[in-house]
Length: 118
Image (cartoon, rainbow, N blue to C red; front, side, top):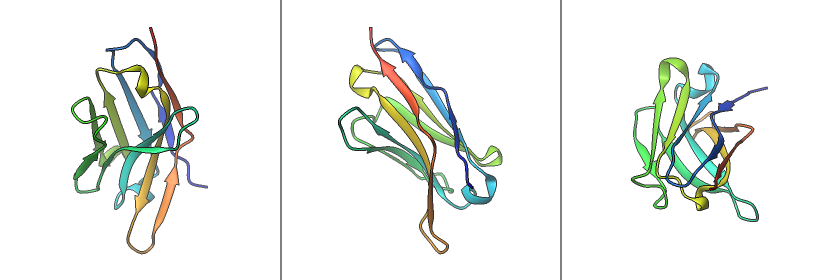
């Protein structure tokens, strides 16, 4: 069973920062896109950011300029640095690994809670 291990969530005040990390097995992450989605209570899961194996990044408009995604291929780890956090960023954050060429697959982490509140 493939396991993605997330860490770094927690409680932070508005305007604060948090960093998330997600470790995946090297066998599945080396040639795949890694990234993050989030799901707030009562809302659908939404895309946050992704980074390809070659380093191409994509970010949601809602986080552009505040969140930074990066990856360390040697450690099979993807990071999400979140700055200027706002209450609307409160959600469970899920990392994923996705390969879009054969063999295709998508694996998800268990989720980590991020709460932005005074």
